[in-house]
Length: 165
Image (tube, rainbow, N blue to C red; front, side):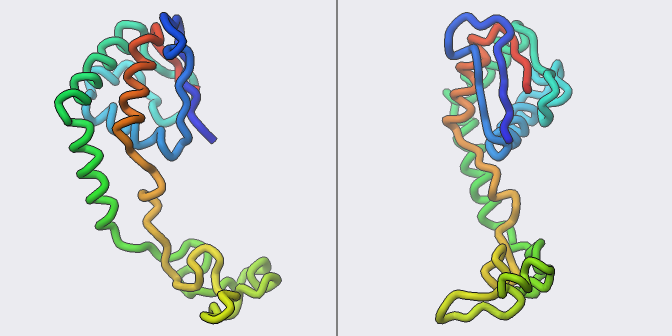
């Protein structure tokens, strides 16, 4: 699933369409709304694809602010600090085996995942956590990249306003 953002009245090809997977969109939307709450207030539903968005003036103002953030290093600093934060997060209990390392549900039993993982063959054990009982924190699946902000800023500048679908 992804977030498809359409320009309302694009002035250039780059302003017609912007797409992110949900993994990339949510951190981008978090940055936009945290860094520029006054400029993003015209859009209530940044995290859903129900057609909310900004008008032309709002999109231009946001693009100007993002370009300034990119130029002065704010976005790069945010990316670096977020990376440090994510790296420091502790492992999570596996959601599939509840931290046991083996799957005792019907599918697990049918596929031999209900026995501890064999270190020689690699067989057995929970397929979500490789039998360790722990998985990476889910927040690490949501990347934030300077390049994504730059691409969105270019889109917003030329979108004529946009809608998130």
